[in-house]
Length: 211
Image (tube, rainbow, N blue to C red; front, side):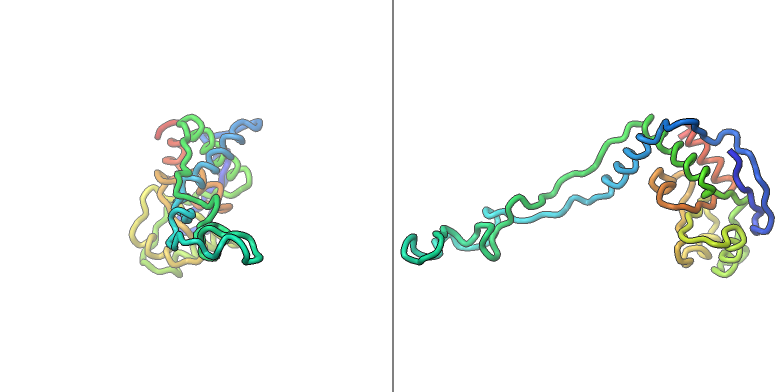
């Protein structure tokens, strides 16, 4: 797989072949990718939504009015769901939405996500992410040189230097993560990914079973 490799200042680029980059000739891994993305999203759900049933709401159990003679339907208690401030019928209760992902499926989905993003031209490699001073303008200059028309961008490094982390944190649309923490959902969510040379080595090691 050939990716664009930029110099540290973003002014020069060349195509470099990453032989260990995962490749696919068919639809293998597409179903796994879908399932893993769904699982990641499900695992983020708190599952804390809760409503009170008629047995849990506060209120008197006294009969509202006499059984007959009112001209309307009989009512036994104020806590029933169809009464104002009554209980909720079939409402949500705290539950666990998490899904388990086995290691092989997780690895396959990660490989497929990288392949799809690289095929779309969404992954660029930079020699190093280094800024002399913790100034946003300096980081923006490098980012604009590499990606002139960028929207949301994910910046990946093996370990961020303090200056680079401080310079990039206030740029609108820019997110940062370390290569060891990169998830399949991250690769899917961001159409533009800028990764350092050390970062891509770590990612490919993980993709090829090194994690």
